[in-house]
Length: 353
Length: 102
Image: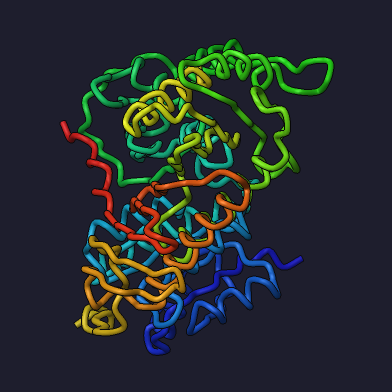
């Protein structure tokens, strides 16, 4: 059976495609390389056959790379994605990571950069053949750390979770240090492991990083797993996760809240509703707007919809997504927008806790 | 020479998320705005269409609204209802601050 990974390269410049085809042809995994000269062509090829990796230029006419990547991330979650650009604008880097790309890389200009680029691509392809996981968005960060340690790797993992960011230093398969906000060492490591979603980026190793972690990675991962198990809810007899049902009753009693609807993303209808006699109409409105503004976010390349606030004379409404749960919260109209924002933050924090 | 010269590609331009505002009337026509001309008119129209649809569907659902704030990781869109049309503000968000290097 042919185990050669398949890479789809997308760039509007045919000469560049040829250069990259030749360059990537040198990879030890000997990937099968296909090319597309437009975003639309790339999407058609992805529809027609399975690829392991998409490498996409950002600057393309008609449909730019950010738009392509937004669609790809939604339609083909297991596909690994690399954004490639000659742009040095930090806005594009942050937008690409907000879309959940595995790697953002400036087009290599030197032999050394090309070598590092090829190593990263080979690493991404390697993970696919070893069982497959992609960033912390869909898989556990524990898996990534465990693999890095088992394979005796040296690297720096940079993990971002919304506005939070952390780093974990691994040297020859040992956890050496971690940093998150003001935390260092084991406490920073545990903090990062408690994030349930986000993106990660693998940076080159820093062998000179001072050691602040002395425990083995197994011991630390075990401690984190225990902490996560303890915080996980159980399922009620009705099949509704307790973590979804009972806290919602608390949320609906929150200051200023008129109603709360919640559902697990991807499921039909709202599973839990509090404070509305006839939730279907509100649920339909919320769903329409989530779909509408997610689509607009993709068109703009602005990243996934985080929160939508609507203010009116009869009531205010906030739509938000947290950890695969979609919320629609109604507020008393007497509240000012800033109050709604603050209360929504508290409400989501209460939910998360 | 290496790959350096081959990777220098002048066009097309990647669209930066703009800062500015524009007004749209009840028929969906963009009346006036402060967005940079580099931001494509098609995207301005897409935003206007979706925002107007959101306002009108809210009214149809008996949830009259005066203002929307839509938050993305890279962009905030604020829209105020204006006699059937809307005034729409776009504000790109600063990238999350990089990790402190110690």
